[in-house]
Length: 139
Figure 1: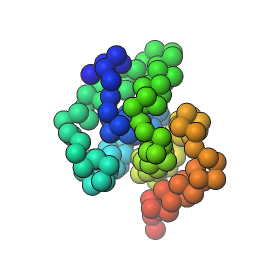
Figure 2 (figure 1 turned 30 degrees about the vertical axis):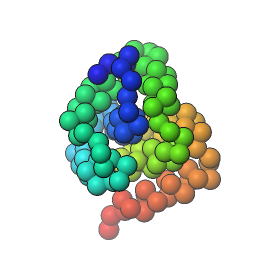
Figure 3 (figure 1 turned 135 degrees about the vertical axis):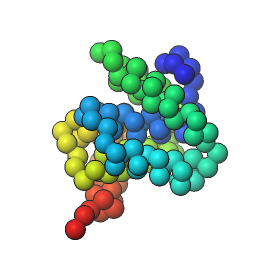
Figure 4 (figure 1 turned 135 degrees about the horizontal axis):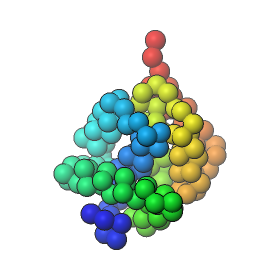
């Protein structure tokens, strides 16, 4: 799978989760577990071939290397993702970012970029973010 290969909607969701996790250059175990659980349990991934995850992750890493790579990645994601899944994509990205209990500046900037690129209404984004934060609270 390369930047020239069309991706599926599910691949686009996986790519966003990987991009958020990689944004701080430290992919944590909690983030990997969250992605794995998400892919294995959510209905949107019911027919997804999980063998594709490693190829999608590799593609994301390769695309993020060049200066304009993030722009190209978002273009590919927008092309593959039906608009009705934009909020789902943002929710999954928020869940991955919150999985380790800390959303640092690079992850926060990536979430801002995702909001912008997927045209997520600010009020809806705030509700999604609050839900993610609530699901990942610790004692």
